[in-house]
Amino acid sequence: MNVVGSRPDGWWRDRRGAMERLIGLLEDFAIETGEEVTVVFDGRPFPLEPGAVAVAFAPGPGPDAADREIVLRVEADADRASLRVVTSDGDLAATVAASGSEVVPAGGFRRRLEGEGSGEGSPSRGTGPSTHPG
Image (cartoon, rainbow, N blue to C red; front, top):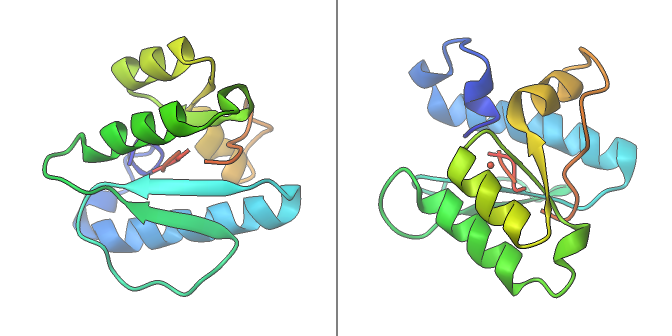
């Protein structure tokens, strides 16, 4: 939700719609770059058509469920150095960086998704919106 929330465009009035729009942008990105992308969201799962982006809904309660899930996924990956996690959460960024993975700022990445500049980095193999951008 860091990527969704990086622009105050009224996303909170239609959280699911905002999540679906982000997935669409990530689909375009994944197809264009050929990179493997996973987005991890907080909240209750909803049905989605399969596509170029892996979508995960974090188990467990609370607004930090996706952050916890991202950390678990990063720590479980044998090739952590190849991962890029998109987030604006300082604690998540510090944990991910300490694991050896790259952190990409959510706002810059969203601008890149929306064609407003090259942004910095790209999510690879994983966060979310939060590679797991979310």
